[in-house]
Image (cartoon, rainbow, N blue to C red; front, side, top):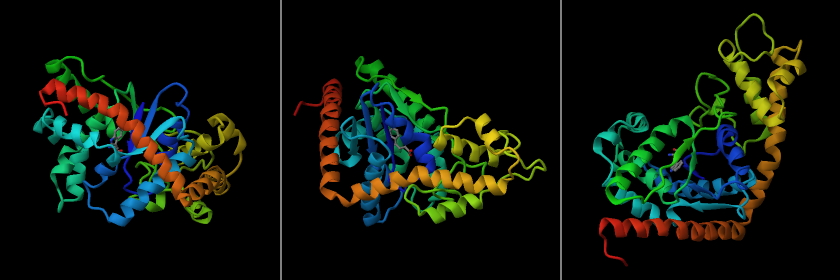
Length: 326
Ligand code: TRP
């Protein structure tokens, strides 16, 4: 199993509940690789010092969220040169038309119209390389990345068709529970760092978290009770799914707990539950981040383990396409 997150912003509750929290529990069943996709991040202009800081913070937060570096391979993408190397090769097996159809490219090109660079366009070939190097069965991703995993499958099949079975064709894996945490102040959009008032960051101060929950949009229905009805009460449903994810309670139990309570009582209780759930994560992440020697040992041994696996695939590819062995 393999996945990556770009260190383009601070990790938030959506990344945690939708992805990282579920990854941690898979280490017994799968050989797991998780990385900071720093090479992807530079397709949009970054402040160098911020990129470096966020990459290390992200690693500390992965560990604090329960990804044990003894059981998972945690690494920084740019530390494993095979990603860039296979990325170039796969560029030569990915069609211009395919890349032109990627909705993330169209969205980002519109958003950063002054910097529509080649890397932004060929981003999916690098992502295909990230994945195919490790021959994973499953690639856990959010909905927005499904198209990229599908492109990866097409590229892998095209390559295998020409050269024989080189790549395992991976499956996108979109977890059902907690997969979509919505913005607190716009429950029709996904929680995202681009809308910070509706977004709860893992390292955020408790009072800021509580303020955001108190201001969360509920619904203007007349009933004003806590009932799970995502279609008619999307704001309440989102808060209930967050509450369920951090307390382990079912929707029926939550409805019973808040029977007779208004939204004014419900919202701060969700805020408190989230704060208590995140507290040990925040404390542990700060502790790890302060221990630079430990962090370095994790990303160094992660890169070593990842390189070993990745280079095996890369050597096979080089040979198949006719490059002279080093
Ligand atoms: N493109 C992913 C995102 O923006 C990050 C990513 C890069 C990734 N390479 C990957 C995810 C490989 C899964 C597998 O969220």
